[in-house]
Length: 289
Image (cartoon, rainbow, N blue to C red; front, top):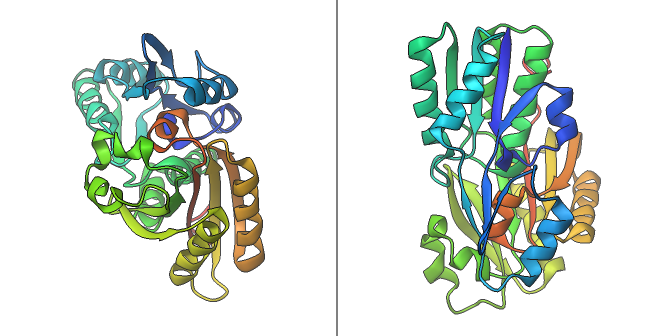
């Protein structure tokens, strides 16, 4: 049997996790003196309420290597192979901790754990995980699933804009962006994940212009008539996220769409008003599930 593991930065809802038998390693959020396990101790509405009212910006922590050992050991009771697919190693310690956990389990258990750096975040990661989980449910071999993942990783594009740079400017993971936007905090920065790093792509005045520029960036990546899989997420910006997905459906050939909230462990670094899109070309029917 093959099992799929990811982490909660994938922005996948409990419905998707349960439907496809995916295990998500938790991240942790710290609001002043309070500690919350993502997706367990704090509902999304409560998280948003805290994010808007908290005096000091919250921090996050990745699942430890010991937690990954526990997850892998439990799954090893049924699985011969585990694919553990995670947020970019340049943006979190999750991949490192998962790798350490996998090495520890592989020494003592008759299970093979393949830890994969998705090089993306949010639903970009989530879509890779879903495709792997669907393939596993269909009974695909580990070689077929590994090939499928390799086909998608590197093709996923992630663009997003933030309403304010306040949150990103204080993040230790995106220090390169501080100088770029230090003098234009009133702008809407258009950012992307490229080669696992967060980079600046453009800027816009106002949310509508920001959405238009994201569409323009997408158009530069998508060939005419090419079908894509696309996912949109947001932080307290449902109307803007819904509008972006509507515009994408009108402009591009969408084979499948996903819509979700941005995971809380990512949202604390981006802040309210963030809208994100992830997409990749739909692969050949022989590869995709």
